[in-house]
Image 1 (cartoon, rainbow, N blue to C red):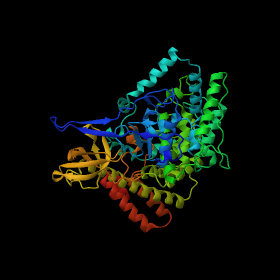
Image 2: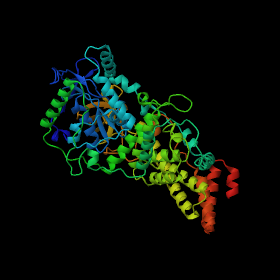
Image 3: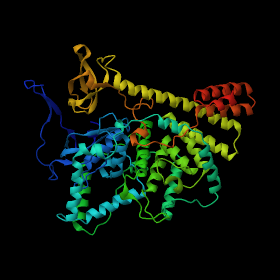
Image 4: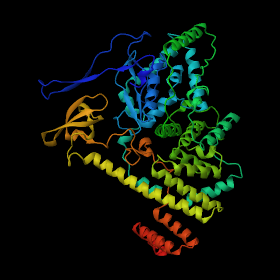
Length: 595
């Protein structure tokens, strides 16, 4: 509805229904929707415009479906993005909603799916007039888009290359299978406590690396350094400056002049007269249809936070070799092709950091002191060492208001180790950093306990306690194995059956209690205390960036600094507390020393 207010072409979604054959054995049920007949004004029948895994139609290139998907992201403050747009004309069916908390079934790829969409989304006159801000892409990503357009302009109808290209796109039409194969489904991952143990170790290795980096910063760094042009170096330098400043959404971000007027989009000249004519007709048609120019969409703090997640996930996808087509043609020192585009990793990490994403700040801070990052194996060798920037990035991560506590605690540990190894910082400042880090560490433990309790409740609650009218739940839609969000509108058979009304279309069905599972109260965005998936679960790999000191080590270091500053009484209490924690962890020798 928000999109249709000023959109030149209104869109609609066909309603779906459920048929129950009560006279047949077992009363089977079927999903039914009206057949969409005919063709649109472009002469096309049923067409898939985009998917939940990043595919964007390049054959017909309609603007309305893509702009609607982008609009849904900003209209929901970054909490939702409606993808998998398909249908005839502007009558669509079977969309897939992407959410920041992966709540809409197996096809909900969360921020990763959003990142895949925006990587391929092309801004246009319509998106400018609808007030949608520009989603920044790296230079190599923009080059790839431009190259792709050049390749398409040389293809003629009926050519084998064109047919192969179209065939490749049509392979993506089987979207249900792609949902399971494009990326690892986060909800299916089994996370163990082993990662927690690996993260909770001493910082001796980190300290050694930082000390080596202090020396290496005065020399030429060795390693897998991607050969760079001057423009590459300039882009990295600019990005690292962006990482330390807050993102600003002014008129330039919305492709407008300072006064608010729209800037024209310049199309490249073509020698093809037919192509030039099509561009002119398209421009006139767009101007005629879009007579009302919408105000720039509001960018709230919530939107910025979710944009930061999208940029971070896009950087991570680059680092996981998801886009081999964007790898720069240059070679690294050992004459092997780089595994991925490191410049796009730096670009999106920097933009995520400017949006106060603590994980991105932490990844860049580690790279700035020569430490490896799980975001990319090439990051630490292709980012110049700068300890002042690393400290600023750590402080930026710790100050992020909407971030979980774990990366904040890791940033605090890293900041303390940098200050300790530099040996130029006073004890009072180091004490303040350690105390703040300890608070984050305690908060992270509470968040992890709440997350485990939430998972436990997801599987057990309802069967033991029963459901009540108004409960927020997920129902096993038509017993197909896919759960969708809704609410309980009736409880039958003494709680053995539940009537669930689904949020997406208002339909309802009766399910046994075993096929209904509770969820937290629906809000526009779940806070990190109740968020269902961590980034580790989303990517299916351990985030080694979030290494922290053990709690008793932190407390002992605070005790040492308290003793240095003359507060011996507080130091004694802290040493005793550290000794008890070390004893509980089986570190008897350490505990005896402190006690």
